[in-house]
Length: 284
Image (cartoon, rainbow, N blue to C red; front, side):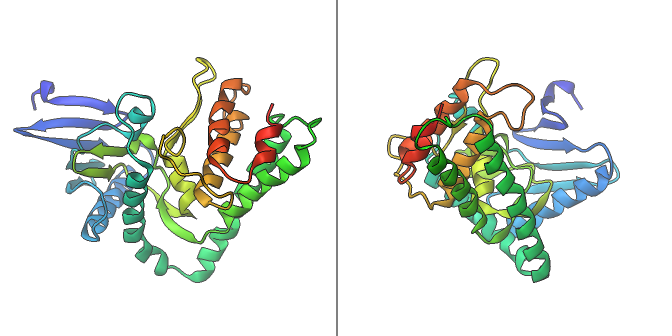
């Protein structure tokens, strides 16, 4: 094939011009590469049959560990969050997410309830330590009278997230895999699935971390929209976004030290929230 018709997009993913149309070719490597290609291909087929917003699968080459699908045209949500494209409305992304999850619910329903319950306990036990790590990180001023109440509000965020039922979700979804197409939002690179909290997963898929090197503040689709509604403290999407923003500001998932720019997003989310006055007051 003419090399000029092939464009490298990301690790293992290429855009290929085939006449008047573009295709996405994803090459898998590492352990069980062929099996992973087959799994992703099967996921596209099953989800498309159920009306999920995913691109149409064209071919799976398991021996060569490759998947070929229609190219999803449009900027990614990551580009929109960085200001390189117009931001979509939260409701638009949320509706597409709901359609994807509705197509995946049949997988959850077919599972052993005991397995679902074990997954719920595991995910809850993973999120609670995030809240405690944030509290211990130094983001809250311990000398502030609101400190203890703010710490309880952070714990309540984790409790609110964990009050949701388990659902099957894409495990590797991020803003770079959410395409804002002219015909609607499309989810791509659906390689792995598992049980998790839906709102927590959606928040992870609609946020970008802050950049300690440049001082760039974190980004969240839920924050900064002029018409964004004020959210109740018990809203799971608020809880997910706030806890993730706090963890990011505290530097829990990176080797670099915390940077003051990380708190900008936390303050934005607090300004949109009801009933978290102690958290906002006690931030450094």
